[in-house]
Length: 161
Image (cartoon, rainbow, N blue to C red):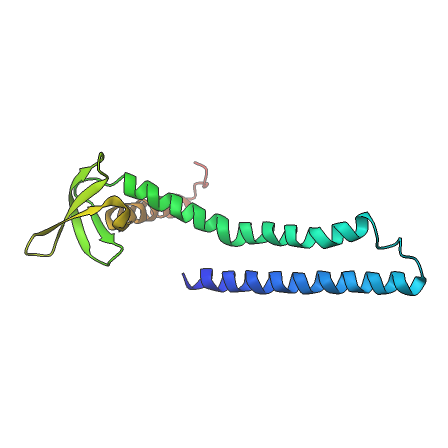
């Protein structure tokens, strides 16, 4: 999470630097054309490209650095919320940890049980922040795959076998 914030700040700084650089290049080109006495060097297509190319490149850059990763994360969260099963341990957006007792697909609600006193809460699926059970299962599978890979390498087998 810390690295994502750093990357976003770097993206903003780089884009500001690009804006400054392109404005300086355009100003330099205009000064050079005025000094030479020819207005045609910068006018026409060259001026239009230098004026519109930077904002377009900036928007493309920001899309791939900031917007697209956020959309991927939101899509993964929605998929996780749709795939909730009874018995999954979940965390809500409010920080409540509980176990799913019932999933209602029609109303998109879940009933979770929290604590040792078996307190039950009815909430929307959108309020589920993460599925701890799914994360633990994915981590266990990854660890098992890495262990098998390490065993294969230690026995002298290739990675592809």
